[in-house]
Image (tube, rainbow, N blue to C red; front, side):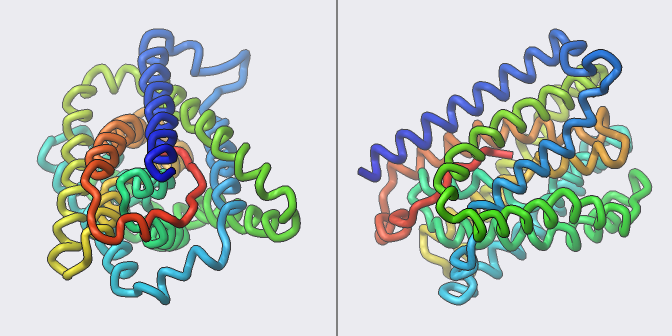
Length: 332
């Protein structure tokens, strides 16, 4: 039964990744399709789409998502702290190493400062990792984002571009906290319809993120063609280093195998959608938004491969850790 569910999760993730790759290729080939419709610039859709995605996350959340804090506080703290230390510092280091133009470099830092990707829960399920821990770390890092992201960006990306701390904090709260809160309320009020909502929202979210990636790719086509391969290499190194450092940090602190896998996935997968939304609010979607746009399809591919690899390496307690049901969410 678990093998069949894992196969379905991997298959859906593969289809979703393929859709993003097709969207990127199409946007590079026919950018005019994703720039505007009539007089309406399509980039104005990015923030509303993200709010819908975060609302969907809120409809799937409950108090149970925070049980991990009580049951395994050490692992939760390690996961959240590692995520907000490893990825931002990696982003800052890589941005300086590759000597990108300032706004593109700021985008590399921005994706590093983002919270965990929502699809980390699915990848952890496929990888036979610690799913309850994954859900808790994703939830906490997302709720901390309005406060942690602006601070990290001010500290690490301030040398590249001007960062407005309070402005960014308010924008992230509008994109994350408000929709999640509405989703939580809807989940409480319409409990009987929650099953239907939870089936529909992941599909809406996936379609939304594919469209967001296409819009950003089209908007930043010229810059992407100029630094595309170099930026893709930078993003790939960022992603793979996150997996590696996350896993071995868990080992260093004595966590069991399933939790180490979870920390690796939580650290390596970023909410690229949120980073894209911030780039839009900054008015720099064609430059700052490029690294997040590339990070999405790359982390989808590497995350799926890693999850599939680990799924073939069953270890002690893996069945116990994956018995908990997890709502399929899209990679961001």
